[in-house]
Image 1 (cartoon, rainbow, N blue to C red):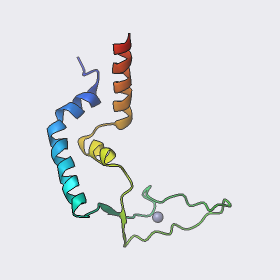
Image 2: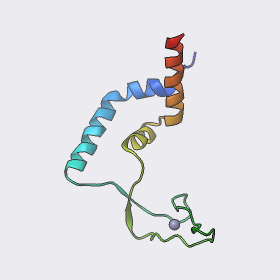
Image 3: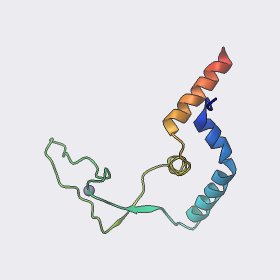
Length: 101
Ligand SMILES: [Zn+2]
C-alpha cells in the first residue's frame, strides 16, 4: 500500500537533516553571506518582458552577474528534499479536515 501522505512523511523523515541545513543557513545569514544565482536568459528566469504599456522589452539582466535568489528558505529546502509544497499543503488540509469530522 502506498503512503497516503508522501510529502508529510518525507518532511518528517528529513526533519533532522532539515534542522542542520536551517542552522547552516542561519550561520551564513549571521555572517551576511547571501545566496545568489547567475541569470540565464530564456531559462524561465527572465522576468516579464512587457513594459507598462504592453511593449516587449529586452531582459535587463546580465548573464555575467550574480543576483540574489528570490525564493524562500522553505521553498529551497523543499526542492532539495524533493517535497512538493503544494501537495504538502493539500495533505495537511486533508489531515485537518479528517480530524474535524
Ligand atoms: Zn533574461
